[in-house]
Length: 356
Image (spheres, rainbow, N blue to C red):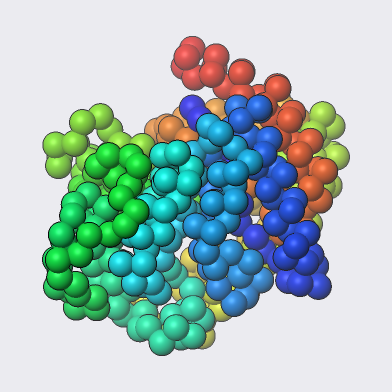
């Protein structure tokens, strides 16, 4: 199993200035190669504290490319609903070149009603915009002199520059939250999968659907799954819990506040059950995140046990993307957590998985 860093800012300027935030996260990114973390991942969101410090993952990852040499750079994820595919393709090609071919291109449908409202895009178009957008970006990266007529964007005889450094293009990832159709489509199209932790039984089901769709479509292997977890490691369990409780609670509150449109009656045509998901998250506690295995908080031994338990219950996944600095987590705590994980947890996980 591989481990990397998932940066997902949930901050207001009153809590931390943008200058301080980016200085700190780029420092954490600079530790990846030396500690064995294999990727740096950045989100795309807008306007609100939840994700608003990251309107462009590509800009951030270009900076991260300058402080790393081996870590993969993952857009986690670009949102075709709010971007022209011609622009996305050109910027992805540029980042692939800047990083020496280390880009992993992740895409998502977007799910926050306030973003759709502010961009003037209908929620009911999200699935079509996503499908059209990722297909157009794929064509532009894989081929030259490309033409495509879509409902939302069309172009004729276009060669996107810079051409990708990786051939025929960087690996594609698709983010899926909870809709079985999204997991199945990712597998059918041969795309790697970015997920967030769900109840173990439900996750076992949707990951099974993804892998079965992958196999049925004739793709080699079984696909690649990246799952994201909060992580805070300390040698003393109570110290880790005390350090993580406030920041993780703050991140969850930021999510619920940003997604409040689902509770106010936003359309769920392309998002069945999202109103119920956000209503449930509104009641979620830090303790429940721990109990479900969504937050790996504690000593190295605690975290090893949590990881192995969740991995077994959901049928396995290949990559863990660790959110080490949620909300107002101090940088020093996040750095200590990374170092302890790399020293005491990662080597033992390799042995545990080999023995399983």
